[in-house]
Length: 517
Image (cartoon, rainbow, N blue to C red; front, side, top):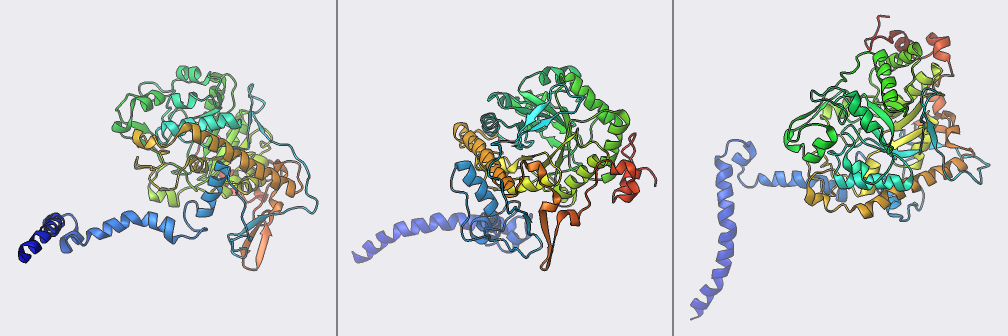
């Protein structure tokens, strides 16, 4: 009787053991005989632990291993600052800075012994050259180019509704003006890339009639020609047919289910003069709205060639957006992300010097984009020549992005960068738009406080001499001692006396190819 009772007690345990052992044996046998993975063949079942740890590694590193100042592209403190401002939580830091003020990465702004006690609640930038009949008044922080298709419908709607509430603009990205961009009524900058999405014919060429019809929408305030982007400068893109949904096809002017190609180069121009002439045509077709270009600077002589084309033709772009090689939301080959393109600071200084040196800066406004997320970052960019800043990933954080690095997989856990309806459901527009508007407002409020602390009337009075950078543990210099900043007209008067002589002489208004020097 006792033996029978014991056997009965063992039956459930044996059942559970078999339930675990049989599948494990099957997996072991499969691993032993498969020929694709060497580790699994040599170490059946056990080798699978490696793949599990690889999957868990990013999360373990982000939440357990990394310190507050570690992590890339944005560290924990940078992300926390955006989250706090977006949610309206306390965003101050106790007990002093955690930065190593003697490391060569440290830099600071110079405050005044007599700070201002008051300043305007808001500063704006009037964008439009003398050739522009409908200039636009831009905020100092706006939403950078992120397409519908890269971001979800709910993300686009929340961003645009936040932009409307905060009175700042929302760049469409090159994926066209979608119904979601238009649904909330926020100001738009329509970005036009080499695929001419939303203004193309059936063969993928630029269609002026379709462009004019879309550009007439009052919600579209400016037109931006995309020459390149910091995430993958000089690289085109392909959206596979299965990902081209009905909504994406509608926004881009392509057929649903068909492969969608963004070439690396434009087909409407091949020289600097052709580029500025096309920009002038877009301005006419757009009813006089400002037209500019966005680029990550690569070969310096090509930017100077663009400047020479404006001087030779008399045509002016209304604005230029300098995108840093720090990257953005676009997925790219690692080699492009890590080794192609000029970082924002160097690119912004070069663009500023080219425009100032050629006497064009008063007419052509400069915007900066590249890891902008704080008032200090905006202040430094404006001190180096920018008129305003754009941010992409910071606004994604405001939406709830947790930097899971899944943007390219369609498995974004927060519903920001995915087309999966189930994942998008988690992003509630009516909650997130307020966070978008609040982050922008709080960041500019901090910028205002910094400008007042520096003793200035406005942020454009910040200059390179007011920004210091540590060169090593015992030396620091103001940025006007680290970089050369040209005086108005200096390139025209004596280019050989500038650091840009070789690029200026190589630049040709009629070609992007460098002239022999």
